[in-house]
Amino acid sequence: MTEKVDCIVIGAGVVGLAVAAELASAGREVVVLERHRQIGTETSSRNSEVIHAGIYYATGSQKAKLCVRGKELLYRYCVARGVPHSNCGKIIVATQSDHLNVLKSYQAQALANGAGDLTWLTSAQIRDMEPEVEALAGVFSPTTGIIDSHQFMLALQGDLQAHGGMIAFATEVQGLSGSGRQIQVLCGDYALQANWVINSAGLRAPDIARWLIGNSPAAHFARGHYYAYAGPQPFKRLIYPVAEPGGLGVHVTLDMAGQVKFGPDVRWIDSVDYTFDDSNREAFIAAIRAYFPGLNETCLHPDYTGVRPKISGPSEPAADFRIDGPDQHGTCGLVNLLGIESPGLTAALAIAQTVEQIVCA
Image (tube, rainbow, N blue to C red; front, side, top):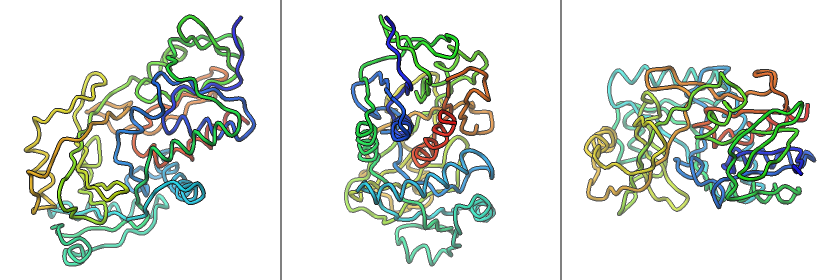
């Protein structure tokens, strides 16, 4: 006999865990299906661990609204739950004269998005704050920070389980089919029947969506490489260049121990592949030296890669987050979370609230 469940969340990444915890706290029966043997092994653990301010995204977009709201929720959650984080701030730098107008556009965009005021910095002011950085000018984002993403996910898992939810690990969803107002979720040789299915499968989400929604967007993948920096750590804050197509440029990020990492670049790939390709090392070094001329390249070591779960290709404008419920696609009981790339970590709690509103309406 097919077992019946109220809510199934596909994927135990940071967004799936946030959604599951939110639904469970609202009194729903929740089971998370995760194909790996632990939480957050893909996009959620292969990123910059940055709490974004909400600067870059089109005003009124889901990315802008959910990032700004999610940032506030996330800082409060970290304090309440003891999740390691730091509101260290970020400097976005102009290394060429044609970047100066880009910085001014960021100031305007941040205000329009409710992301806060970005303070203009002269070259001298940047050197006072970060002596190793060389730039013509910059803007400072005081609400940008960093977080221990794994501890955040562990806290969400704890919230889920405290409200009676559970995670089924090593359980790969192999099919969805509609059955009246309920959805059949196929997992190997057994099936579950759910009132609600939330597809938070990240890189696989578009493919899973198409099992029920034929016109869902296709998945596109962009791999980013991160290099660790050994030796004395030269920065106290995040340092970003102006954004580039497909990403935010090769930037400086820090972990909670103060370890500096550089990355990610953007390399479009046909399928998910976490191989570290060091062949573009010289281009990587050149990108870093544009704002950090004192880089000792012998201290730069390959660290890890991540793959962005995109729903727009390399020649297309960046797609917005897609939170598609029955009002968007017409299938009862299904919510598809599509294209949840950066700033998905920052927006996770706000995305969870949005999904809860759909399910519990």
